[in-house]
Image (cartoon, rainbow, N blue to C red; front, side, top):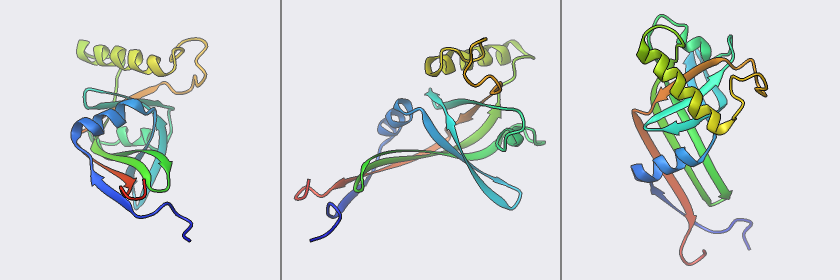
Length: 159
């Protein structure tokens, strides 16, 4: 007798399946290089049209990415759905990390307003007086330039 549900069948997900996983989840992890270290930070997010939108506080580790001399910084974003040991889905997205400015060009302000609107679908009080995390005033987005996904299910004879 084994203590696991059997042999898993692992398969690659296609882009529509990957997009669906990114869209239905609200918590993921951002991974990035910072000096000689690799950092991973959890984040609440909203996914729309190949962009991941989130917010952070001034001084956080990944907010420092956008304070660099570069316009964007390469990151990896990961989200999982785990039902049991051999029944799960995982998505890895790679792309550029960008701060969203609330000033500057009309396009910058439009992107800011879009981000606020999307984040309010997650937390309606975002950037309002009763915001549950009022210190998170730095908005960002990640361009999903490449994405892969995998899914594990128990083999058909064990499902």
